[in-house]
Image 1 (spheres, rainbow, N blue to C red):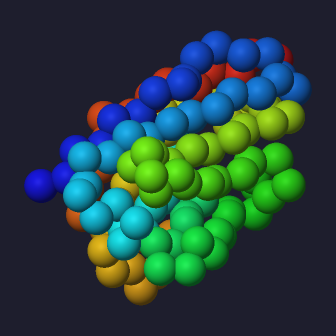
Image 2: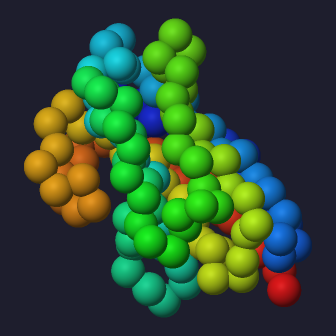
Length: 124
């Protein structure tokens, strides 16, 4: 069983920045494909970004490209999401997710482990 714990959420004005962290208990963290998803009130959970375990390759949903950066520190068993130029539509609960094997990296059903989420609120 892998535990994931998110932190770093909060309230920020539009145009501001936040850095989310996701700490993992996985003993072989470097092998895991990691992702961020988010869920806005009244909406379905949506994919934000993914970072591969084997290659470190990254993939972003179009709405965050150029503003968000996903990264990982395998020595610290931690993944990050740097969010710049935040917009009110970025508001939601952000979840980190992990899986050893992923075919469709944007599909939440591909991921086996989830954190409890951290709230991000962007005011206009």
